[in-house]
Image (cartoon, rainbow, N blue to C red; front, side, top):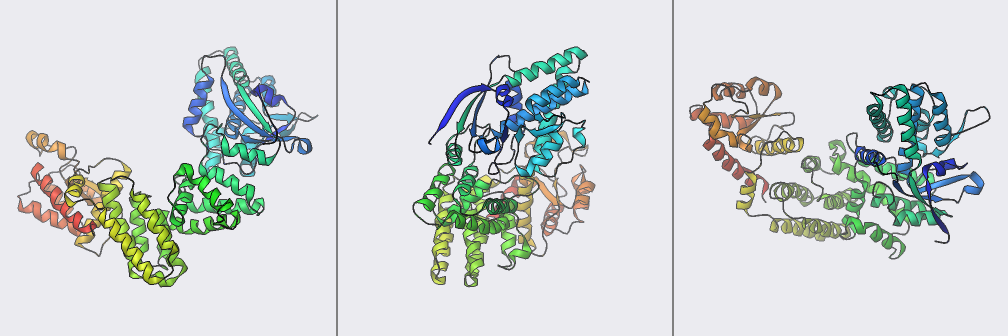
Amino acid sequence: MKNFEADKTSIKALLSKWLKYRIPWYQRPYSWEKDYIDNFWVYLNDESDNYFLWTIVLNNEFLDDEWVKDIVDWQQRFITVTLLYAVIRDFFQTLKDSTKADAIHGDYIAFKNADWDDSWYKLSVWDSLKDFFEKNIQKKISRDISEIKWKNKEEKRVIENYKFFQKEIEKMIQNETHDSKIQILQNLRDKLSNLDIVYIEVCSEDDAYTFFETINATGMKLSTADILKNLIFKKSGLNREDIESGWNYILENLKNLEDDFDITRFIRHYWLSKHTKVSDRKLYHSIKKSIDKDKEYPSYDIFLKELKENSDLYHQILYPNSEYLDTLGKSIARNLKNIRWLKVYQPNPLILSLLRKIQKNKKFQVAISYKLLDIIERFTFIYNTVTRSPSKIEKIYSDYAIKIEKTDNINLFEKEVQSCIDKMKSELPKKEEFVANFVEIKYKNNSDVRRLIVYIYNKINNNWDNEIQVDHVNIEHIFPQNPSGDYTKEQIKETEPFINDLWNLIILKPTINRQAGNKSIKEKLEKYDKTVIMMNHSLIEKIQKKSYQWTKSDILERNLELAEVAWNIFSF
């Protein structure tokens, strides 16, 4: 770097300067969740007089023209600090101390004009959050935070963190007199304002990128995707809007309403599907080297374009859509849904390479392509879910993904795919190892375990009767978890250790499950008999022949019987 300055200061001194601090458009969204807020609050309320709030990196490139400093690093803490100031200000307002409310607003949140209205805010966030943050946090108004409507996860985090600070301060002051409440708020304000920080100032955007790539001063570790995004912004020939649009397109493809998907995982899986196996830690440098030095991509623009195109296919791996995937082959959606159901990501580079191949050229839409997906599902269940073998398989997936990517001859393609299937077969555990691990699967009231059990029963049921699919079912214990008086103490004591064994379970429609409850075996069978699931009828007949007895030995016998069935279904 050409020029930079470093010094020590405090939050109060930083915000007393007559200038604006701006979070640049290339920074990641506000990401502080409960653990980080908890830690921040604990540290802030430590008895120690001195508390160091890490390092802020500022870019002065636009200082002379716009009187603004861009925040290269520390933006997560800056937003959080502003949130806490806003909460303290609002408490002063609620306690009818408008003088102190105005003072904290003017000293730490906003600059005032001659009419004492907000001229601008000391912290300017990125465009996607700007209006929401100014209206609901920075603006000094009477507000009911519980009534504020948020429309995305970033806004939700802002509101949740405001509520966290609000709740913690309420606990601090709830049993105090009015004057004591004011004093507690003042002490908290002063403790926050006197926090020490080290600030580093650079003079250009290039220097800012260099810092962004090499330091980790924020409360959350920068991900490979964070740094890579900024590298693309720095070196792409596209304008800011096109880059932002492309990156957001990828994010929208990979996320759903329930969780935040790790975009770094997608980028790494894309890389493994075309290049070489590389760890997350080395991914950024591998990509940068391939573009800047090895010229595997003509430009960062082309790399971003490829990421966009592959995010469409990766979306189908994460959230399979039959209508879309049926254009590639009827069985693909079923296999992808089942692999996703197992929540295993290791095969994704190979699957991505295969989907990319058969999408680009119909000549690769051959039987062995669909066989490979079916084998991947079976192998994933045996290798990852049941026997839980080491992760060396990732290199195998990546190696064959690259071979498939580089193969244009259909005969060679089929040869490579068959070689991949043979390699996976060679990695299968012995049948005895599979059975030993399979019978150890236990029921837990846990969504992942329940999902796995339904998946297993679905596959076994389809082995009995291919006409039905088990989608919306409940899991019923044959020997009940809370036995009624129809069971003797001896029966309960003997069977209790095996109640959650996989084969003391049966899948039923919800209405039948409720009707069966904790009834005796004979009463349960009357309810079970209403089900249309073929494998259940086989079980019912077996219990009836044993004079309605269901004991420890029956559970263990069924364990081994159905483990044998499962091996025949999944092995290849």
